[in-house]
Length: 283
Image: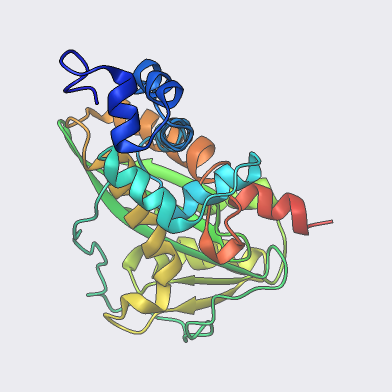
């Protein structure tokens, strides 16, 4: 009708095609307007993009779905995935990182008390620690962390240009301070010389901690800490311009204390952050 209306009357065209004139004129006025379905999709795309940007480009469809559900918007995974694909919203991707453990020493090692059982029924039952390296424009920085396996919260951490026993001791001291110096915690780590050192074992003994160590060369024995390091590097470091040491320290502080502990959702915690999981479950 649109094509021929200048040659044939709209009335005649409507009779031949068996449609109403009023319907044609209504379509003519509104044909460039978005349908209600298209409008709903546009609104949904905005919500998904805003949630993605709030996560600093870290969240995939599952985490975004939980966030939108908490805000009162119920969308399934497939719908959110399509929205992300349509908008080219790609979560930061992973790459492999090197292992830093130095187990070539003659210091005593502890048995593997944890044996890959990372479950805990309360805080301060099982802690785990490890060290990773961070490349800066001024050379290496080493990061040691202590994680409470109950909530996956990073409760202690320390950074240094040297990978020494002091580095790991400082991270443990922060954890002890934050948690009120509990006694009898199982502390798990790899067999690195820093964790086998006299200084570290002395600190553990002071609080009657039970020391546990991974089997040699088995990263799965400390999978929770390895997972944290993976998240840190993928989500906060690998796509950034090479930082100097000061900026790296600031970046790690922000990731641990603000993004990871307070905001990052864990599937193992029912998509709650470590802080919210503890607030919900710890009396």
